[in-house]
Length: 516
Image (cartoon, rainbow, N blue to C red; front, side, top):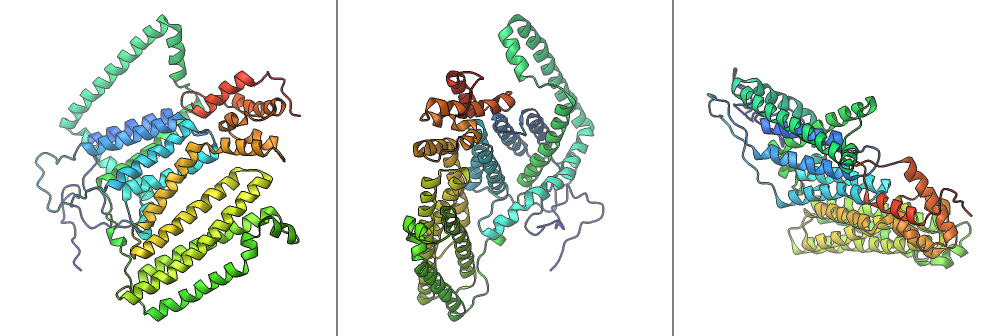
């Protein structure tokens, strides 16, 4: 293999791209030219908006403002093409332009939608799930990837890109000191200074003329303190790294298509069918022996010495996690090593993997039944609701496995499974899980835990309407106490907390509430 080296005296920003020795260099050479002025200004503006808007301690509208500002910054950064310095020769090698697939835009929209959940729902646990999922969807929007291998490779690239972007941005910033760029920068600085002066003068005049406007302006103006300044600097640096890495990935996107191939060294039918056939028999034996456990319901729990409803439901969940993970691993291995050249090969793999998936679906149905029985007996909690949602998602993945077995192609499966999980999480957020928990437990009424209801987020307040006045006032008092200790500014404004404050102000008799 011939490796091209950089000719002496040729700057890499002009005569590139050259083979990269960075991680994933074969699939990701990076940006070939320095960052443009538009990129630097857009990243700086987006990071400044994030520093001012982002509430680090809770969900709020500031997360949506930051997401929108970051998206606009990346669009503006990519809208202005890089210019070759005056007098510089044509590049000897140019990187081919890669068209972004439509699903990249869908992943971008999903990222913004997940961060927007913090504007409408105040449950911290739900927003943390949305943040983690948004990190994954944002990575898919930037790096792409179809198979599990390419998606896993793409997940490692944004942290690397954040630090690779620093010298890229520095090279772009060094160009700003050139005479032609310096004159343009002076004009930009003058425009910004005039804008700030106009806003300051007229804003002060309007504030002195109207008290309501002055109050609104004071609420929007950030309070300056040592702690706030440290937070601004921290968020600004993190935002520069995040937006810089994203802009670097957009300027030099990776090519992960070489990691999407699932064809590997094939083995004979006997070599793969025998172990998988035995595994199917093991699964069938497990289901047959555990029929009483899977479908026993109340009778099995009451007749089995030492078995509680908690153990009854949790055992099914962990069995489900194990068999689902094993099924997906088996599918991935079969797709890579099992031959599919003859009709007999394809028929065998359909029968074996289909049987394995169907047996796993039986356990999925049983686990859902058990967690429902558990919630009806002891009440619904956040953990139990998440368990049920995970089990339902596992069942959907197994159905997708069956479809992939029919078509004998599974390259689409990881993306569809992730998309289904994202839609399920957004659907859960739209359903308001804390309110669902409160309404379920109020309808159940027996074994009602007022302390647990009081520990739910303010999202649960509309679901407490069915409680009797004394117990409702107890729960509302606990939630009102938390709201009083955590006031919101414009950055942390949240629809769920705002509705809760309105209901509490209307229905809570006063500070003298007590719990029966």
